[in-house]
Image 1 (cartoon, rainbow, N blue to C red):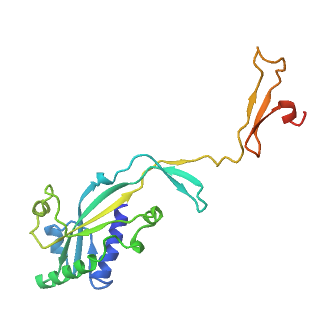
Image 2: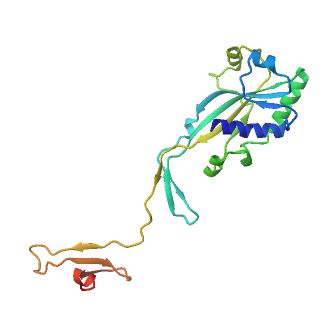
Image 3: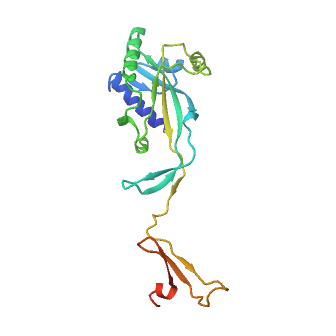
Length: 222
């Protein structure tokens, strides 16, 4: 699922700032060695953090229905995870980097959710919205300066892009076919009751009352 969200984010960034053929959108760690090898305008969306959004966790199972409303199967609700990307621009001049980063920001801000046409099929089947936030201050436990220190690079202007995506959970439980016949109960006389101990069938008739028939009559006298 993570690589599919990468591709969805790549499509959004290409449409916003780097159309095909004008530069690259990559997801590599922006280390010193990587920066030294770069030779074309680049947007780098480095995935630096993956955490479950526990506020979205649900319990139990939910039913999947067909167009007629018939339950086909039951499955566990998906678990939601926050994928945090460090978005940076890389060109030959700082002014061009700022311009590229500004284009990316302008293209991301209109989207509160990842566009539906960029989502993978598995998420479209779930019929859910995938939230997208841009430049929201990260949690205190995540310092961007510490991230750059860990990468061994120099601090650069960046955007914190967070995609909150569901991860489908298995197993899936198949359900039995719907019941199409009414219930029938076989009743026999008690030892202290009438001498007729033939089994009787209790059936629900059309007027809503119960009718007791002998087993012989219920079976057509066989």
